[in-house]
Image 1 (spheres, rainbow, N blue to C red):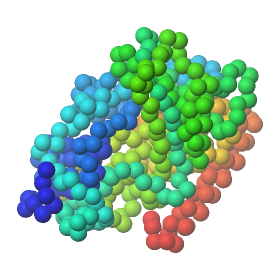
Image 2 (image 1 turned 90 degrees about the vertical axis):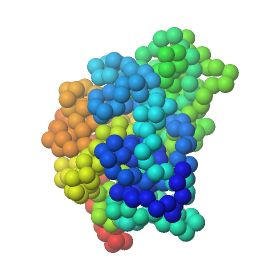
Image 3 (image 1 turned 135 degrees about the vertical axis):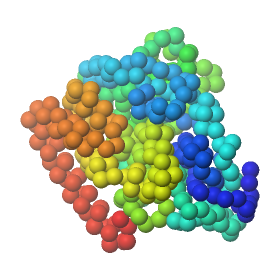
Length: 391
């Protein structure tokens, strides 16, 4: 560990040692840059379950970093559909080893402020670099929609991987009470399965309510909860601290808080891993990493996905399930474009049109009205941020 006043050359200062910051620091060091990474607890264990479609992961990441791989996943909307697309849960210990920071100068300190040219630490000292990137933990603006989940890991011999189960946890024909949630079931190693109940987006219910719905939905046949079962609580904002993550108003933000989280799903780790080289290549070539990370198509896709989130927030329970049933009936290429591509503007637009067309007329009218309301809210948000000096 280095002290803040170490006399070392630094090409890049990365703030935050989560998966996004560690990946960026690691890939920059591999490219030959002198990198300093600062975090209050840089060696803290990554305890979350990180899932990703395998085709989203960068080619440089060893498949040894996968704890499990499912060649297909199921969704229930409420009909059962099978997605012929491999899905993985990452092995966090292996991922940390793969993102070696041996060639990185690590500073253990609390960061008070991050600016374009450096960071101010809690003890009053500063770290400076020609390029500063803020990859610190997720922060949302007040009132940001949140995702929350309650999950338990248990043992099972065999069970299908389920990305989303929108069937009522109260059984067939039950109307359900409280906000809409879905089941998520993924293997975390060869013998254990995470069974989770998730509130997708909005003003989430208390964790105790999610735990109750988890009990109502039940677990796969043969699943058994260990005496010392691991419980996982997930809770994070789906939108970042600024309206435009590409805004040239400070250091470039990277990772979940830098616009790399999909606002309608909550996934960010695979995208952050994949985008690390975009930023590093720009720095090593003398280009603008902000422009490289956020070309015009990526900005427009981000806006469309925010619009999609706004629509989801306005749909009722029945309409939400109908929406996902329509979406998962699309051509797999369109599903990929919306879920995983950052800059395929034609593909994302086609996926949104296809979902609209797949709905019946009542669903189309409802989607049209909610889309208009969401678009108007985007305009109002833009005006509010502009008045307060944010872009």
